Amino acid sequence: VPVDPFDLVVFGATGDLARRKLIPALYHRLHDGQMPDEARIVGAARGELDRDGFRRMADAALEEFVGAGELDPDARRRFLSTIDYVRLDALSSDGWGQLSAALPDADERPRAFYLSVAPRFFGQVAERVHGAGLARPDSRIVIEKPLGHDLASARALNACFAGHFGEHQIYRIDHYLGKETVQNLMALRFANALFEPLWNARHIDHVQITVAESVGVEKRGPYYDGIGAMRDMVQNHLLQLLCLIAMEPPARFEPDAVRDEKLKVLRALAPVTDLEAVVRGQYAAANGTPAYAADAESAESRTETFVALKTEVANWRWSGVPFYLRTGKRLRARVSEIAIAFKPAPHSIFPGSAGRTGQNVLAIRLQPDEGITLGMTIKDPGPGGLRLAPAELDMTFADRLAQAHLRMPDAYERLVMDVIRGDQTLFMRGDEVEAAWAWVDPIIAAWDERGDRPAPYDPGSSGPEDALMLMHRDGRRWREIA
Ligand code: BG6
Image 1 (cartoon, protein in one colour):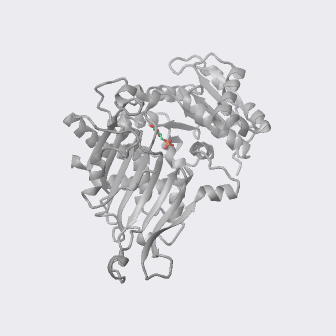
Image 2: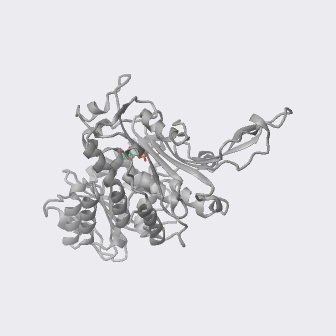
Image 3: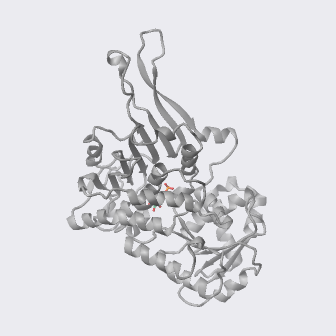
């Protein structure tokens, strides 16, 4: 469905996020007929560029991140002609008059400001957007993590934005919520009658959430150091996934209905009091790849590149069901997956070893090879006796998309169009961000107090030994990272 012609100002338009994600996402939306030719994208940055220079930069970004062979010449030309550029400094009043002049006066056009700048500039840019009279009552402002580094700083950031914008204008991106398969999680749970009766402590043994990456921190080392996996991944992406699994059905698929339910989950998370239930790791050197300490240029670094933890959603539905979360860099493979492990059948009617039933596991694979599998136990085929064997019901989305000649859209395509449409359902509300920090902060404080170093782990492994033990102790196992 096409959106109305809009004006989108991208602050920090020459940066990595804009080139890698936003420009390609907007191109695809125009190519697919959703972004109208009358839309205007105004890049705003400090770089000494003019409109043509910025169009050339955007064009190069399309070649690199969409792929030269994939570009449709007509869409490419039409897309580039929506682009304008204003040279501007967030820290001074330079350029703000030109920005105002570059935006059409028409009141009815949706207007959005995307702050693709370092978080330390969020406050100043918001203030100047407001001060220069650019924001209308329904203009949107878009920000992305890090949204603070602890509860106090997240509160300060929320308060700063609240000084200039209403909550209904603030779009806080967690790009995981824009992923096609993450949205599918909600469809799976709330558009099917099949799962809901089983979706509770009576039938579910445990939940595992894994977001594994095979890459290290690479060039981001010095930025990442002092942040670590807990702040970079768990506080946002993993807790958001946990919310979507654990939340009560909202009455409607509407922003506050969904976000109210997620907030309740975050507030119901049991505090982690036992540090044995949280494992931190840091990748070591191997096979020519440098250790984290070298990537971070900090030999004594205590920053974790891996976290595994066990928590519980302490409410009526989930009481007693462990949620195991893990994420890390330089692991065996790039896999994001949620696995719901059901309790075993209460009684076996099959004799001896033939009666060993497997566990029913619903695995939702977020990336790559997006899809859903359901582990079942079936009769081992053949004329021998009745023996049981594991089998999987397998629905790989990639196959279905390929059959329909569709492309898996990037998270930013959906999220940027939702900003224009004014739909906040897939964006985090300020109180959610604060609740997530409130849960994470004491864990980080306890680590700081203990002052030890994260356990080293081999690149290409599934993390430190202690992470395996975390589940072994409970008589359970992580799924393979493969
Ligand atoms: C980002 C983190 O939010 O998510 C990165 O800052 C991480 O460290 C990235 O690599 C992973 O995102 P994706 O979409 O590649 O799974």
